[in-house]
Amino acid sequence: MKKRYNLKRNDLCPCESGKKYKYCCEGKVDWNQIIKEGKDRTPHFSIRGRNILFIAKIAEALQLDSVIPLTSKQELRAAFTPEAVKKIHEALIDVWPLNTDIQNVLQSARSDVSGLYVGDYRREHIFKGLIRHSIYANKIIVVDPFVYPYSVRDEYNPILTPEQYRAQTLKNVNFWFLLAPWIDAGIVEIIRTPNDFDRKLNWESLKRQSKKFKENEELRKILEKSVSEFSTREKGKMIFKQLILPAPNEYLKKVFIDAHLGKHGLTLEKFIAFIEEERGKDPDFLETFKPGKNTRQLITFSSGASYEIAKLTANLTGSYLVTDIYSRWKEIEIDRESQNVESREWAPLAKAFQSLEFKFLNNLSLEHTLILRKEKRLENLRVFLRKVWKSACTTEPFSEINAKNLADELVSEIKRAEVEWKQIDLDLLKWLGAELLAVGEQIVSGSGYFFAAAFAIAGAIEVGVTQLKRKSFQDKFPAAFFMKLK
Ligand SMILES: [Zn+2]
Image: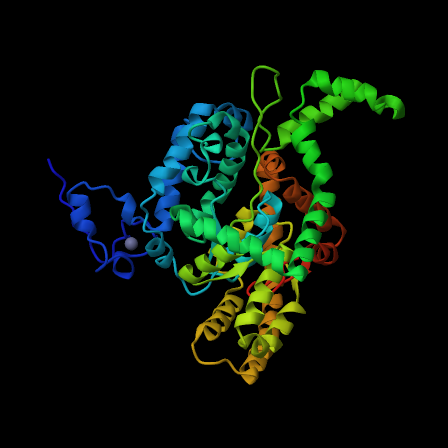
């Protein structure tokens, strides 16, 4: 029997935006017809719909029953065969085909306050950014870390040469799975940028970007500084992750002897056991290198999109930019100075933002931030910041007096938020306490940072609740748009 389909205005929209049909596609997309005729729905999917579809396709390619992340890392790693890597990238093309009307898809993602993240993609950095900004933004837009197969030469095409993308794909999938509950809740959306679908735009923006850095000495110096700071800070960690962890134990034995690691009493067994433990802990670790059996792995570092593409994307989605990269921040500043006289008028507010001390969830996990958000905590602050954003978007010139008033209001909102925060602190203790007992093991494997925080707080219960707790939550409040994220 044929099922009759009749979409009602109050039904959830079939584009999977999470909104009701009447607030979403009604009058724009004839879903009744599409479903009746059994047509391909993908071209009409919202970003959230595409994200959910892609996650399902990843799980299918890896032959996983569910997408609960990091439950069995061993099992997950073994699933990353070249065949699975190829399938995942083919799924990416299915979800975002070359003829995607990207402008339309991005424009339909507009919401009253959304941030586009173009910062550091290493796990702890990007999640810190998401946690911070999700407190007030309706939505955070993130550029997909997967390389678009059509954007690279054949030798780097993950569909043609999947073997070399196994480690990076594991990393990307971990990223997607960790964000899955946020995508589901409609807070995070993972997008592709317009340059994926437009080679000319891609090429020309690359050229303009390189010209800009060549011509602006200040910018170039800042970039060099950002890069050198990054490499001094991260070199050790990266060598450890990419060279030591994947090295065969035979090789580690040689290192142990050559570097005289035993001279302070460390034994080879202990050293190997330590490395084994680290391999087990790192969710992005794929396998040890076996000469002749597996090949080199391509590892990419991303910051989402270049400034120019980010700006274009931000315009289409109506977002402000969020970054924790200093040189990127400088690009924003220079650009604003050269184009926008309003920057000066915003100065009092920007100043107020930057000088704010805000207790924040620096050490809290994504899950707990999501609870805060779902329980509508800190709602007053969100309402206020939405107001600020709306004033910024109006076409009328923004006055300095207006900015001053908003700055005053901001200070009082923060005071209110701090009162609310005290209650959140107490609730956090409850959540953390219960979860530590129930899923202690899982927390340990999921996030070392989180575990450290949980320990500090658990200790604080005994020694005197407020003081220690406060210390661990103190941090600067980074309201993007005109703020540095440090
Ligand atoms: Zn819709």
